[in-house]
Length: 480
Image: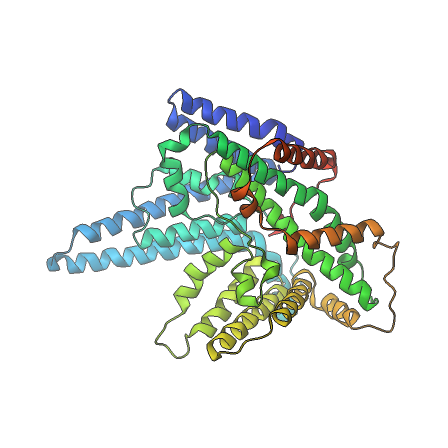
C-alpha cells in the first residue's frame, strides 16, 4: 500500500484515523495504541506479504534484548559498592554480549535479504565457482527499520531507553507513516509524543496542516516525480550507447530532479499523516540543491539518515585525540557504510566514497579558510550532485558510457520527440523553479494562513493529483 493510492487515501487512512481517536474519546487509550500498532502491521503486510511475521518477531526480539540491556544498566546505577565490582564486571560483559548479539541479528536479517545475491556473485567471480543466485525478494522498509532497531539497542546499552512501555516501543518502530521509507525517527522524539495525553484528542489545526503537507507531497509525487522518473529511467535502463551531450545532460538532470521530488514527496506525505495523529515526524529535506558544498548538501539531504550515521557511525569511529581516527577517516568510514546501506553493488560503495571525499574537501577548505564565489560554489556543487546521481543509478559500465556522453559535443541533437518532449521540458523547468525559487514544504506549512484562497489551491492540487493517481508508481526508495 502506498500513500498516493485510492485504497490508502479513501479507505485505510480514514478508518485508522477515525478508529484511533474514537477509542481515545471513550478513554480506551491503551486499546487505541494497540489499534494503531495493528493497523501499522496491516499497512506493512499489504506491501511485504509473509515477511510481516518475521518483522514482528524481529521487533519482539529487539525489545527483549533492549529491555535486558536497560535492566542491567539500572542494576549498575543501583549498585555502586566496590564489593560488587566483580559482579558488575560480569554484568557489563553480559551487556556487551547482548548488544553485539542484537546488532548482529539485525545485520544478519538485512544482509540475508539485501546482500545474499551480491555476496554469492562476488564469491563466484573470485573463486571461479558457479553457485546459483537465490534472488531473494527484498522486504520493503527493511533498511530503514533496521537502523531504528540498532539505534534503540545502542541507546538501551547506554541507558537512554529506561521505562519504555511495550506499546510505546511498538508505536515508535511500527507507526505506519514512517515505517517503510522513513524519515528515520528516534525513540527519544517519538515515544514522548505517544505518551503525551494532549495528543489523544483531535487537533483540527494539526489536521489542516497535515492535509496541506500531505497534499503537497502527493502533488510532488504524482504530477512531477512520476513522469520525470519514468522518462529518465528509460534512458538509464536501455542498453548503453553514447548519445549527444545535450541529451545526456538533460536525462541526468531530469533524474536528479525526479529523485528529489520522489523522496521529498514521501517525506512530506509521512509528515502530513503524522500530523493528523498529532505526531511530529522530523523534516528530511531542506532545499538540498541550494547547498554550496557537499557538507552543506548532506546536512540538507535525507537529514534523518545523516543524523543516524553521524550519531552511531561517525561518533563511534572519530576520536579527537587520535591521529588516524580523525575527522576525515571517520567521515570516509561513515560514507562507506552509507554507500553499502543504500544497495548491493560496488557502484553504491563507490558513490558513498566519492560523497565522503567531497565532504572532506569541503571541511578541509573551511578549516584552511578557503572560500569560493557563491555562484561558482553552488554551480560546482550542483554539477557534483548530478554526477553523483549518475554513479548511484548506474553500474560501472553504464556509468562510463553516460560520462562519455556528457562530453560528447560532436552532436548537439537533443532527440526531441524520443522521450524528450515539449511537455517533459516544461515539467522539468517547472520542477527547477519550485526547487530553487520556492521555500520548503515545512516553511510553507509553518506560514500558511488557512482561508478560502489556500483551501481552493489545496483542493485544486489534490483534485489534479487524484485525477492522475491511477498512473502512480511506487516510491524509488522502496527498492532500498
